[in-house]
Amino acid sequence: MSVTVDDRLWSAVGDPTRRRMLDLLLAGGGGTATTLSGQLPVTRQAVAKHLGVLDRAGLVHGTPSGRERRYEVDEAQLARAVAQLSAVGAAWDARLHRIKRIAEAIQHRQD
Image (cartoon, rainbow, N blue to C red; front, side, top):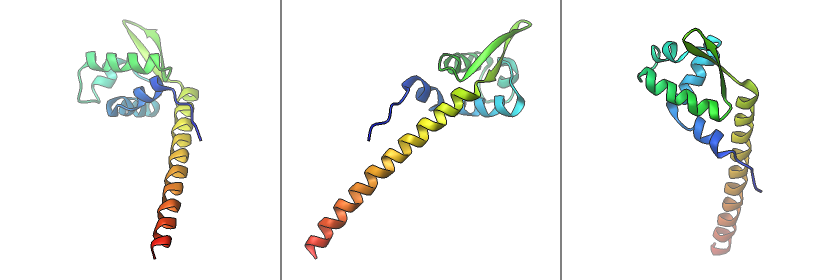
């Protein structure tokens, strides 16, 4: 069983700060680097870099808002990430189930 994984997408959601940013953007209906930096233990500059990663992965989209950009979550891309995570989880569950069956068969032959 092979699951296609978008490494850029997984790398983007693999960071806890970026996941927290996605949570904040979803809860607040969007935000800027400045508003997010006020809610996170990182600098505005770090938030801007994290937003760049999320933007390149397609998870957020920024639109000009005064001197800043306002970011919103791309819910379709987020759903794609969730679907990939579920598919990978299912693939690993199947692998682990096969390993368990093999171990049980070996144990049964030894008894």
